[in-house]
Length: 501
Image (tube, rainbow, N blue to C red; front, side):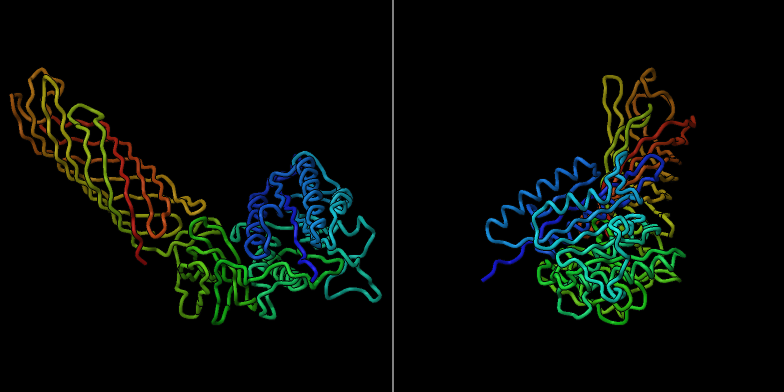
């Protein structure tokens, strides 16, 4: 019985191009997403994937040399080998733009062919990548448009993200390039046109070509992926290998993004008319329907080895509010939090204290949060000249602006509040406290109103079903005592928050 063919993959990426070319945002992340799809659904392990991030010609050469060695070892063990070479980054008619260096397309083709393999698939996601074919003197052909008498090479397939004179595009909403986004989505199941849970190369290209061209056209651009060669029947991914599977049922009338709630990465897209199964890692996800008039969203968790069925007609609900750049949507939830509050003794009369904080806030859209905070704390201070015990309750309202990144929300804010301070003190007239809370004497009891204003810095980190919130406030407060006094205020809170839709 013949041994099973083993895939090897060389994944090259570079956000940086030649001097003067605007850096890309997602090339390295795109290649990371592709690596995850290949290892989760393509059966590749760490010894079969050669990743070259922030690539240089030397890094590409090193990866090719490692692939030569690994392929030779596998073939000595009796395994046929297949090679996937994938590049995402800047390019031009002169070749791949790797920082300040250029790796010519003919040089890439020649070097990749040194790797011993029975079949090779090359995929280039870059501007003008269609020039790859012209550098060989061949015609540009598509899967469905091969000219009469065309005989592709029997052991190679070449796929590019655009024509020889076309641009390739990154899209913030999808947090990646169009071509690689649909390439990964297709591998995860969206390209499974016949429903057999296996994605062949021809299925993948038909899906990627159609979706990339349509998406670019909706942006008023032209981007037409190209194909040359054979090997259409090669299987690149198998949903039976997936840790978990989403089955999307019901009419998909708008593109449906599958977003990882922990990283805010778009894992896959289910376009209109795509396959209904999506292979994903176990975890927490948002399903985000992106329409012309807004968003609809569903939230769900998928366990290991679970095949989760989602009926989009009933699961999706209208969503408005804040979303990260191409990532998670916040559905204007009501959040309730509890934690600890600490205040610093920043001025005379202000004793360091520790207590409890309760918070209720609501997302009001476009990055803005409004909150109501109740804090209560106790503090004491003692020296050879004074003993002071403070008890304080504050009610405050605040506004903050969230900047989301990979599931973490952070941003500035402002808090205005009013408090009631009960102070029991024993102090000498010439002590450090002064006469701010009543007449001098051995012992005083004072109740003081304290309005305050603070500038905030907030951060929220997702932890499974809750968020860890931390807030630091710096500002000033006005003590409405017998002698009104303005003094600095420093306060911090740390706690957990739960969201309610």
